[in-house]
Length: 474
Image (cartoon, rainbow, N blue to C red; front, top):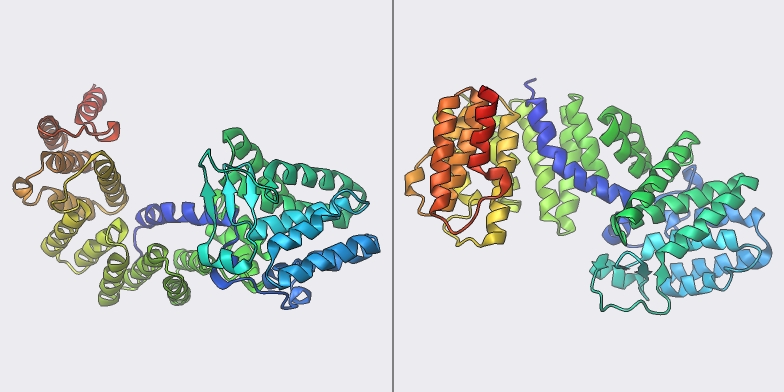
């Protein structure tokens, strides 16, 4: 089995994983993807309750019943019935009636769970708005509203109040281990969303700290729900390895957390461990769901992964097909562009690889589209991503990328684009050890930028690049 260079693959998926980990932190995806699965009664099959069962809070009610007064349990039951009817706002209104009674801590837990499962709009990080009907959330998905003119309305939930009440529930739970566990579960969910839609950086920092601490405690106690197992897998993946994350992803999947990102992450881990057949099967399944959900961007990541798997197995035609499909779904996918070129190199076609990548570069640089400051900045980011991936690969792919950047460069009418191509060719020449060519192309890039009304960003500034080269040379 031929392996794709690990450094390039790790770099190629880093940005994707960053997004997936953000989803893990705010894991409500199963709701918007599959709809609310109302009380399928699977909680007994999974230690902390299945994800479908959590949609109407059944796992919480099961452990609350012997720990609360009948009046509190009646409120919880009434709220569950509203959730089963698809009315989260009405369910919260019922819970709100019990937030000052003897069972207020259990009510706080239920409101935290409900809010994290069903809020539709985060208003400036200070309030969450629940939909009247679940169908509304399924149709529109979740959104963030930063408009200062948007008013917080009666019925909107204060994020600070949710967290404060959960803090009180955790404190009260020190006398009741069952309450303590459930309060931590709810607090992780609320804190995760608070960290992803924060009122300010301090709120983000504090919410993330609370979330991570509670997650670690719940994991140590074997009290992770399926969605929290997914979140903890993200932490393991980010901090340790795929091998550390894998059992928690499996736990999430077995618990009914059917977000396609779970299968995608498992596919990556299987690939890294050389289990190519399993990796391909998982990636194909994830890609299919993303397409059904109308998310071609993430679907492209799955298809790109299948290209990497096929290339590792030396199935060149399959690899090309998958890379091409990824580019159809996401035309600016730099990993797939380099994958196509690398596949040609694997087949001994260096010239073909350079020509293929040069053609893709014309797409990446937006052809003859007139650039403004925003599109120019996006172009710089895309080219930078391409260079980072190329630099993480073999010396041969670095050479091919340099050739593609310089191919027919005089035919490029835009001085800004020419400047970028010369500049990034210079950065690759440093990797190749050709410092003289790097200096020459950096000087040419500076000249090209002088002829453009667009200013290069600091990270693509040839003058600064030349200064660093001079310092390195002593």
